[in-house]
Image 1 (cartoon, rainbow over the protein chains, first blue to last red):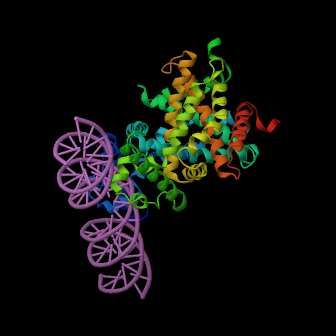
Image 2 (cartoon, rainbow over the protein chains, first blue to last red; image 1 turned 30 degrees about the vertical axis):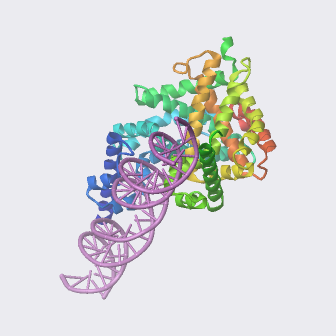
Image 3 (cartoon, each protein chain N blue to C red; image 1 turned 120 degrees about the vertical axis):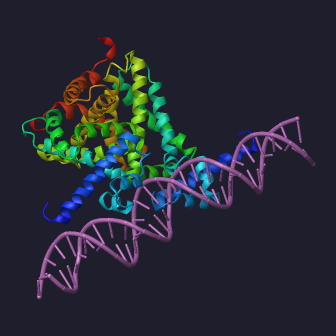
Length: 208
Length: 208
DNA sequence: TGTCAATTGTCAGTGGCTGTCACTAGCCTC
DNA sequence: GAGGCTAGTGACAGCCACTGACAATTGACA
């Protein structure tokens, strides 16, 4: 935040992001035009595109943070943990620090509304899944390095991550469509679903 | 293929689809405009949009078939198989009938090129993942019915499917970036990766 | 063959996004 | 502290995906 120029820039970006998320979540993503957002901040449409490469990028600006947060959480796990355990702990413990990190940029409540919107808007959901896939790849590489295996020849890093990500996606979806959108709820749900993976895979469900 | 009108329509659609895939795979998805496709078939741009709701829909017209094929394969599995086993067999055995079904519409080789393009084009990959998610949901419901459980209260159907889909996605990705794009290769890779899930999840990789 | 309905082309318009150019406001040097 | 430099911006023109409306054409069927 050195110079006046930089502060001004930061303020414009913040205002654009805030206005975008606010409009998206109240009016809907598609129903909000870039002109609307620019008008709300009183800048030209061209200026919006100087801060965000696309309308979509604005929609995911906060997600970007949470993704980075999670990647770091995995990297910080003690090396004695088995891969699956490391992922589990990173997610479950990661939920806490997240709210703080988010609230530095936008109100947490706005973030939650935005998350719901992403899940329920086809284009955004598609983009979200692709982004998740990129995160998965990064995490697979971290795991591979941790365990001293080569991602190019050993499929296990990508496999654990893909399996884990699958469970998380089911969890997130369930959470975002449910009533209780609190942090405690998602943590509890994550743990429960992860514990269900074994039973779901191994057993014959009918012979219980 | 009753009336002349219907035959003509079918021919136009085929020509549009063929031209679209051909242009996409040679020139790239984004670099191909809808006008290009329409011009190649010598119809108006408006006509293209009467056959395909969007440029994207044309890109996925063949995938649509293969998805339906797979869903049916799962539905047709004998009821005594455990869920994971049913999914495994459906995919592994499903690869065969697929080539025939595809070749009825476009050359298999064009389909393969298109598949590669989807994997390597961000927008298409995103769309592909979202579509896969919809397929997952349908299959989860099929499994739930088979096993007599309720998707709304029992997370296991969605969990198995998500885990399975994760493995398939890793497999497809590996396959599409590799040399051997044959049916035998993908079948072998699928089996191998599915067998690796257990080891990847349970063991501590370093203590082998 | 004439009527009806399905199919198509034309045209105009919206919205996301990009390139260009001129202008203004903050910054920095002399 | 006056001037030049440059980052940031607005205004404008243009591309492309997509849509609605209306008119023209073409196959179906009596």
